[in-house]
Length: 242
Image 1 (cartoon, rainbow, N blue to C red):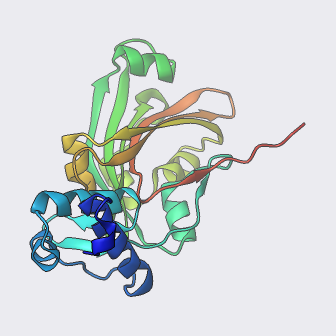
Image 2 (cartoon, rainbow, N blue to C red):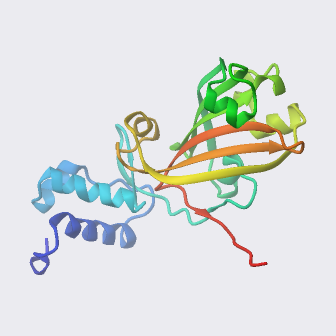
Image 3 (cartoon, one colour):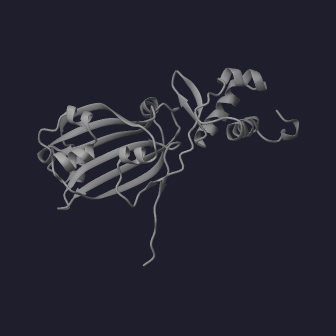
């Protein structure tokens, strides 16, 4: 490491060195050396190397894939527009990426209090609970937990969800018109299970989103909690002055 940077923390120096390599020498998808190799190459402790890699991940410059290694992240410059209709599948396709969804759980349950309140149904009324992992170019992007009222989507099956996107099913199979989707989001840190499914380190930055979707009769037809990787998503909102 550079001698004239002694006052700069060692992991910061390593961040600068690797950031320069990523931006000027490497391409998206290129593999980076392992923590052990970096430790030996730069004469640093594994803890220092781990801190540096965590910082690069927070900056969205690298992606860690469990069991495979660390890679230079894609530079995805197109943000999701929160003022428009949102569909993960459509957004990923518009960015030239290949979307895929893994349904982790599909079941009918009695609506707990918070779900009943958000969906506008009676406590204990039957709702679908769907847990899905959203993937693009084989990179886990978002973990979703969705609730739908059974009364409005009678006969919905796991096979339906594996056949086509949920919003397409809602609009084409059940003839529901999606009028508006209210979405709130906040910064958070990944919990252990979320991190495992998203292929990131526990405690990595994530975006937590809550979406409530209404039909043309102003009835709630979807209530979804999502956890999105902060290194893969950015959002924009356009404000218009009246």
